[in-house]
Image (cartoon, rainbow, N blue to C red; front, side, top):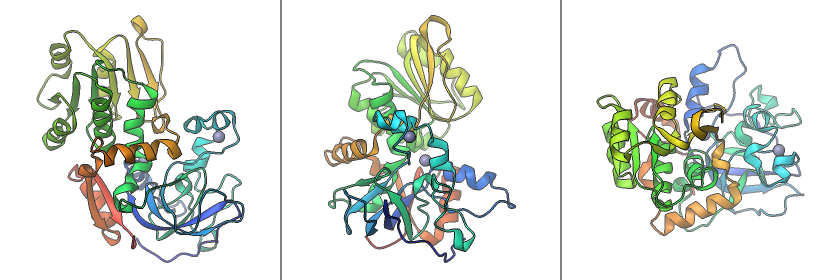
Length: 343
Ligand SMILES: [Zn+2]
Ligand SMILES: [Zn+2]
């Protein structure tokens, strides 16, 4: 439902962004599906991109007119944040899923609606962000292409490049070749991993995985995943990136692992290192990326033709948000992007 709301202007440490586009991520869709009608309405969206319309007095690094991509929020004060590790912010849940600022206030209060989702709420024409979750980007590329870098693509690529630091020649399987999984495939190709095995139940997505860097694919509706992985790798795999959140796939990921192998869980679950022979699972958030460094890096790789994430995108008018969500649920749209305003 698209409605007009009243929003406060930016506080001294905030920036008001005029949104040009927003990606739709599975977290938005899951929250939509599980929302209780009795709860207060919220503005979702957490892959926004746009230009800066107003800047609070204390903001130093951002100016009016800058092009920006929005990412996840962090507090900036806790030990992980001060240690340059904001994905482990001690207030991560409250800052991103609290639907309010960390001080408990809410800029949409007067309309009886809650915002500040991931420090943005980007399914809107305007939103408030801070220097911590806003990334200044080049004006050479359209903002509608850059918008999904802030969550899904950063998570998939960051898992391979930052969290696992996959070395050249390591074997890797990606369970679920949606936007997050395909970003992991592209990053694995950049890292020189081999083989790179894509596992999914949608043949169209597996086909794209092959084009983007997978050396092998497995259709898990038709093939025995464990047997195929054993056949391709000779014994087991060094890394599994698990994006499906299916308990069955989680177990399978551990079963196909080499000794010392690692499963990266991109599903909100936490990891464990008490598995036999040095195997472990790691719960990973946002690919351990510091957005202000990692997103410009992904943009440079994209411009060099090495991270062609634009191939995952499908564009929709803002008013067609429900159709975009339906297409994403059916798997017909890998990364839907809403066109919200003029670039
Ligand atoms: Zn923090
Ligand atoms: Zn997301």
